[in-house]
Image (cartoon, rainbow, N blue to C red):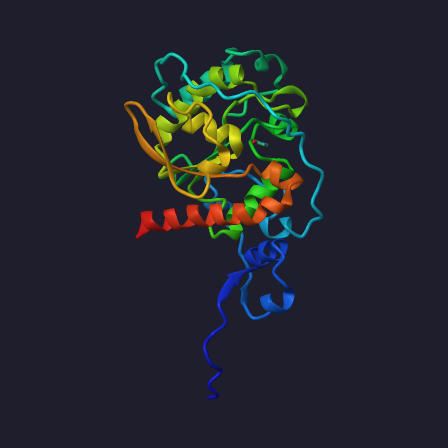
Length: 281
Ligand code: URA
């Protein structure tokens, strides 16, 4: 047999698309051995988020207009007073659906508690708030930002349909897709804490400044700089429950309007992927 030299490095088609997005030239990519990615069959998808298109096709689309993504007030530093946390998922879901702790309940079609794996959760992905489509469907990350998120995770080698639970800082949609206010986040934080206590994820992926600062603010550093939080594994301690590693990256909605951050987000997700590998090593 003819010796064909060392095998070309293998990358998935989603990774190829992501590298193309980052500006890597096609001739260079031609040197890679592209594996066709295989979406997980529905039976493997627990209560999984259902992307409206398969992840491999996401990055081929023209970049759509960004979801409105305005500035918001600083996040609260003090966690709200402790309330008794539900001890099972059904009670927590019922509590979230009935919640009227802030005025967002008045505008919701339904509260969006989250979706994904409930057992052996590797990653808890925390975004900001449900969007219009999420509010209608009762599932998080159903819009353009969610599509990009699925593609990003997939491209970084994290299977977006397995062992991940997706949720938000606030469970009800702010009207006109504005960012949630500090008050709304503070009112909703007990639900997120209850979710963390029940799921006990191996790690948390915080999407965007609000999620990162809400989880990582301390008494001494009330608004830690978003950029300073990226690039290394942070940690979040929930009293009485445990300490969880946190990886911070850009919110996919902000990547839609600022694609120049995609390279940095790729590095963040590689950090998450490496952390995930260390759990199974
Ligand atoms: N949809 C979500 O569920 N969360 C976000 O942060 C954005 C869109």
